[in-house]
Length: 391
Ligand SMILES: [Zn+2]
Image (cartoon, rainbow, N blue to C red; front, side, top):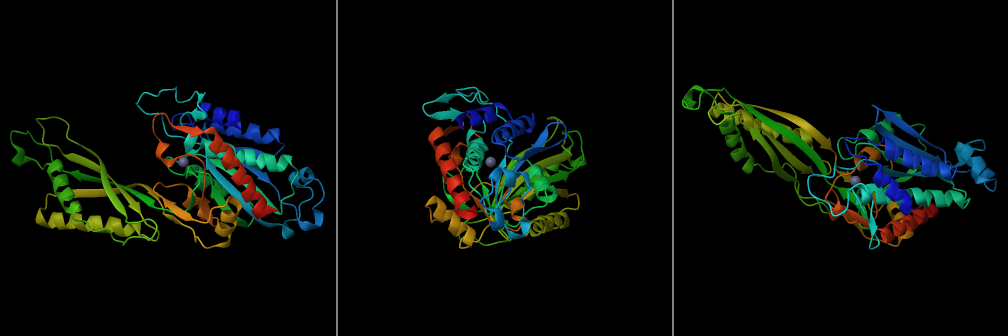
């Protein structure tokens, strides 16, 4: 498992390099245990990797699992709902900061593996693959299908998860979806969503010695930002997730010190709550534009959506969460601050849980690492979840 994790980190699946090399590492690992698996690749280096162990209906249980895996003894009518493990292959870039150990060397020291993606989420991915391989190697017959996907683009646009959800078929009924993202072994049933908006103001250039001949786009943005300071969120706090938040995180405008700027742009990051209507937020901001324009007809602004991820909320009292909690010996559920591919997988109609090794605080930081013992512990938990739900 440790070697598998190291190979996954060394595959360097950044946005620049794509996921294909990491997908090949996963494929090779499953094939070593004779597990049916394939890569779905596109655009040269983008890739999802998918594996499936078919469940055996009661009528043929007792026959060899490998025969069932080949599909020649399958009786779909009688198998139970399956289980999906949904990982992501991509990592964020290693950034500008200096790392103590090279970010893609997967150096092992002091019981840890250092490297970009060790926590987010190659540790959880290696643990899930290892659990599935051990189940298959032990010839344990499963009552329902066990499916694994490691997808592309979770850190950017969830393209891999969306592709899997709309293209993969036929998908069996699922008891649930487990996302092995780093929660430090908290059973997570909710996270906020994300709405990234870009607001641009436009004006008219002029020589800065005669600013009255132009329309200053930065001044327009300043007026908009003043209004935004008083903006009230369109939704009240959620019992697990707290409030919707808003932060203006980028600003760009002006070309030269002696030119009145005709363009200014800001990026706003809203972290949204379940059932929050993103369009309402956009409409609210457009109402602010209208107010500013009625004060000054030169005011011009537009808004565009850069990224949208829905919030996720699974009923924490449902049978799947209860069974999973019993399998791992944790009865408390919680929420996390970051987003995942969970909302994409929730479209499959099954409850989604996020549960994995690694400390969320290490994600996307220099010197990201994972404790090797946590990866082993996660693998045991995943094995117990599979046994609880599929045997
Ligand atoms: Zn992640």
